[in-house]
Length: 317
Image (tube, rainbow, N blue to C red; front, side, top):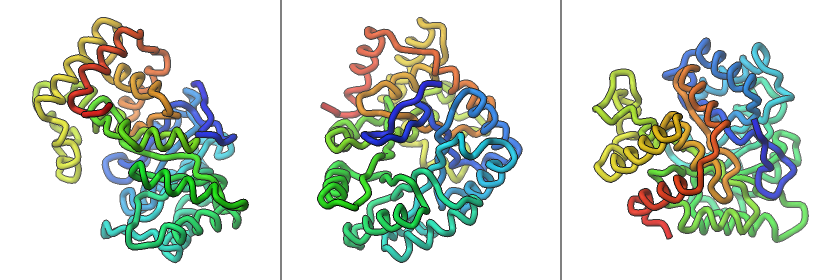
């Protein structure tokens, strides 16, 4: 698998990341192990988790597998903090550093490679939040820092603050939802990240699973849309406009002799500023399909057609 530098940093990561949001909830430890093996065997290096995924079980499973399945030194381990278990945002220095310590304990690690602020907390001064990033690097608990789910102005402000004085740690990544069904990031967030030298990690690159085409005939049993804890997450992308985009992806896939999943992933992977899409699969078989996208580069005419058909939904410029 090809690697790319994350933003203007020296950190190289695989251009497809493995997401672990379902681990410990819909994906059991054995299935998680199979996913990690397949990912590593394909040359993948970037593994992304968060302290709130499955109430910490995702990190615990990953930590166990790092000792049993994969070589930790060959992986780039990323986690996040700033959301409490009750869903409330808390990016105070006190909470963030305690959360990082808890993440390291669950992962069984002395440090992570990338620590990300999971959300912007308007109730905490940004300079306090960012001071926790500096402390985390200075103390050796993380090597690099990033943000997640930040708006364009928040990315620009945080990036500028960290560059303003010597000794502050630069923000190298911004994890944002980005797919053919979700292109709002192109208005402000993606340009802000590019201007600041921050690499984009595209979450939900398959439109929360809808771009695979699995929902064209309804909601299959066992899918995310059929699960009570994920139904509301998927529902916004089951309307007529999204269905029109899905049909275009399916048509492109049929013409290329590949899956709609590969087309959707290749499209977002090669967007300006994107370092890597983060794919969260429920099973190893699903992940295997995603890994096939590595061999696909979309022809320019197909890319342009997909740009056009998805532009109306995004409203992007």
